[in-house]
Length: 542
Image (cartoon, rainbow, N blue to C red; front, side, top):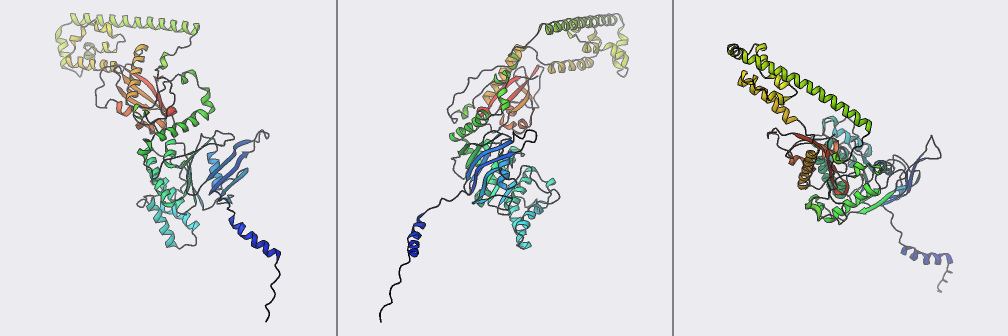
């Protein structure tokens, strides 16, 4: 038998044979896990249609799977707007936001959000709040499986014992734990955090930061988080994305954080790179992209005391020029005055002096009359008066009460005749209010105030050894004795109350049980600022 003839080669088959191996050699670049490409957000302006409100303009960002990203920027720069587009609550005017290559057009269980205000249903318990999300996403699972998921996540955030409490019975930190557990219970691909720890006290905030890092390592989940706390971002993030000011905000800097994981807060804060990155972020926020209102500072605001970091931290800070330290008290600044104001003040001073002299003369003549009456009157009635204290009229005549009530204590001391007529107990009771008045009186001498202010500044400079982590200015009203001892300090804003432990004021304050003494006191305003790693200003309180 003869072999069948070979089939005639097909050119199309040959072309496929040649092209197939070449196609396998082409390596397509894998897209980022979350991509934000040329995103802009514009809202119409009804009053002036030709001038629309541009919130975001040309934002580009690529996030890898498993990364921890922190967004930082001033209020109004569009951070929350960008997160809303990632979550699917809102869409961009132009550009695209995609997760694993799929464009985001609506909310979904693959992206869960934890808000600053917890967003828990107040009529449901912690268990029921978490169960609501689980039964919505895992409707195909049995009731036992859903309950198991809820219990596992309550245990994950340490709220097993509080599982049956409603939000009104939970602290702020516990509420935020419930919100995080509810978000993680659905096993999302992306966790979105909008200032989750902003409303918490510093201690609770640090505890939840540690918990969040443990959850992130265990779940290997991608996290995008908004924060205003630079130290929080440095501790948590792989990258810090800094946004420029609005309107038309965009991404100004994308900074990689080089610290290894797992992270230790103390070890990180001892790393020189920590202070380099922190100062870079502060310079970006407070110099390059400071609020416009800050550019219009008055002369009194710019002539403040600029203090570098404490000596224990100076070696770790990146070398950079620092302005010289010079104490310029607020009272040393010249005051503007006009001739009319000067004349009014002079007339007022003359009237006050004349009135005071008249009152003093009246008080002296009254006291002299009482002294003469006391000398001429027999001693027996006086003894009778002392032995019968319930009789108010004789006691008032014999005791030195008019001396204490007199506005001129010096002439009163010059006429000691009525004092022996009173009993020792009455004399002691009259001396106590005088001492209290002396101790409570303030200091008005400018030179003395300047000296006390310099002494207060030196105390704070010497004892401030804590690296500041606050991002807002802290202002305190400080009461100081003549010798420089701090009797009392009161925070005048919320940030000062929250971060009081980061200042040396609690250490420098005189213990409550110590005697105040008869020294005069003065009040100063002490302001700690986060600029340049921590500076402070001392000036007399108004």
